[in-house]
Length: 285
Image (cartoon, rainbow, N blue to C red; front, top):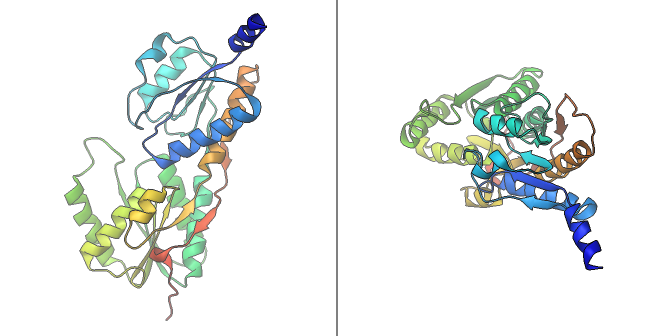
C-alpha cells in the first residue's frame, strides 16, 4: 500500500508558478490555478513570493519539471522559460514567445466596457491615463474607438511602465495634474489599472478638481485594497484574473499531455463594472 502511495506521488506533474504575489492580479491568478488543480490534480507546485519585475528564479536554470505557468514581464524571464524547454503558458503577453501560448484578460473589451459606463453617465469629454505597455495600449485603443464612434473626443496621457525614462513620482504627478486641469469639464477618465487610477485621483486633488462632479474616474483591476484606499472609493472594470489562472492551468494540462500549443492568445471577457463614488455621477447640459 505504501509503495502504491509513493507511485502516485511520483506521477504528479511538477509545475512551476512564476507569478508575482505583490499585485492582486497575480494573487487572483494563483486562486484560479489552485481551483483547477483541486478539480483535476494533484500537481506538485514550485513557487515563491515575487514581484512582477524580479529576475527569473535561480533554480529554474537546472529545474527538471513538467510545466510552467508564468507572467513573462520581460525578455530575461521569457528567455529563461524558453531555454528550459518545458511546456509553458504565459498570462501576460508583454514578451510573447513562439510556442508559448498566452492567456490573459481581453484588454479591448475592458476599454470598451469602461467607455460604455462613462457614456451612460452622460459625459461628453474624455481622457485615458495609461502606460507604455501593449495591454494598456490595447485598452486605450478600444476606449478611444468606442468614444469616437459616437462623436466624442478623448485625450491620452501615457508614461513609461518602468525604467530610466520614467519620471519621478513628484514630477509625474505634477504633469498629470496639469493634463487634468486642461481637460474640458465635466470629463470621464479611464485609467489602465487600479494603481494608475489612484494616482489620477491624487492628481485631481492637486489640480483642485472635484470628483466625480468635474472628473469621473474609472480604473481596471481587482485590487480591493487600492479601491478602498482611494478617496473617493474607486469605480473599476473587473477583469477575470481568477478565470485567467484557471484557463491557463487547463491549457498547461493539455500541453503536458502532448497537445500542440495554440498560436492565438486566449482572451477572457471582463466580469463587469463595480460602481463606486469616483464615477457615480450623472452629467447634464
